[in-house]
Length: 255
Ligand SMILES: [Zn+2]
Ligand SMILES: [Zn+2]
Image (cartoon, rainbow, N blue to C red):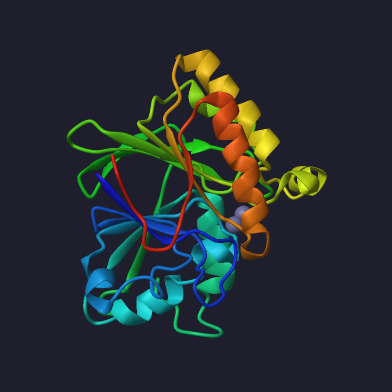
């Protein structure tokens, strides 16, 4: 699997885009930068997108990719029922922009498919399982396994406390979030995001349960605090003898 990072940040500024990843050019994870990160051809090659949760920085480009696909094709959008309820009553409700879940009438550009947690399904040739993760709104992470048997787990946004996920998976690559530096640990806990210390606790639990640590890539970075986070994460990597990299727009990770 080749995982292209389109967006590895919590927000959008010149040079930094919100969360979106693409596996082998066809299966996207979250939609924070599917349009700003992909050419029109790249967008039209996508077969499906898996949405972790409803927060704007993860769904932002759904209406615009709907516009780019209208009268061309249909993109399957997978997510849990709570995500669908939120999208269909706010972002894709037809008030500010066309509702691409229903338009064009001949073939709507977006087709939402409700996922059940813990159910393993096949999406675009990959085996996919959604696992619930703690966050401020109903959220899932995705375990994606290639036909060759390589796998990754993308947590999306999370407060940590992921041992319930670790019991179900043994990924080769873990892509998770890192939003706040250590001096904002209390804020991280309040806003249900990770800090370096929370990440370290979850990785120690992973190693206790599984006997190894996968390669780790962090996204959802705050551009204003990235250098501080980089230094603190490097220290966690040294303490755990782990491979932890900060995601960058344009980075390709081979699994
Ligand atoms: Zn979120
Ligand atoms: Zn987010």
